[in-house]
Image 1 (cartoon, rainbow, N blue to C red):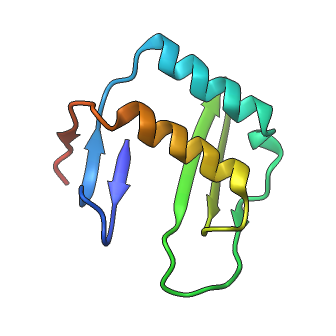
Image 2 (tube, rainbow, N blue to C red):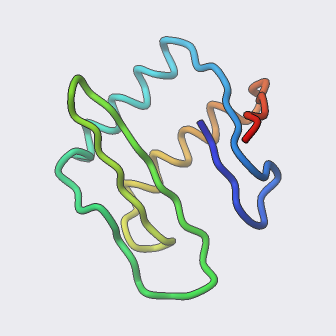
Length: 96
């Protein structure tokens, strides 16, 4: 699921499908950076910056990590990979 708030092409909540290969690539990167051991938030305390929040689930573990630009580049690498893999996806708006 994707949720855009301000200054993005898709505002609101959206969903799309990933194939098994894409999921495996994202999962590999999540484990490579030690996502489940990260702090919950990384910030340089700048205002008016874009933020990303990524939530991952593995078995019974659920972890959410947020960051603003320049604070934790490995987290932004996950977001960039997801953006790349979904840029040509058929997005479907989720009604609120």
